[in-house]
Image 1 (cartoon, rainbow, N blue to C red):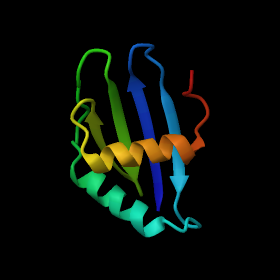
Image 2: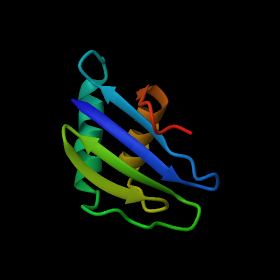
Image 3: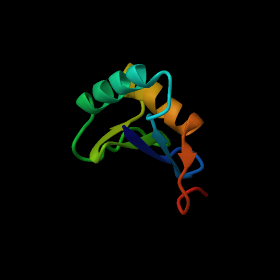
Image 4: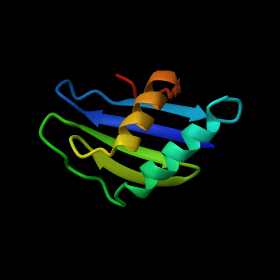
Length: 95
């Protein structure tokens, strides 16, 4: 499973993008479950969220959903944290 997360907004207005491939991960079943739950709780169109809050675009195997602070589900929060922390940074968008 390929999971990509783009985080925009925040006080500094920085964009961060990372991708994670679960093929060789020992925790793949857990990550897959998080991804399914995160996508199920996402929106089809971008959300404004709150001023200076983060907005997220989550793409799982080609399906994209959107969410924003402070209304992330627990699964979305855990998934975006994992991907941004352990995923491969995607060039061109990080400032």
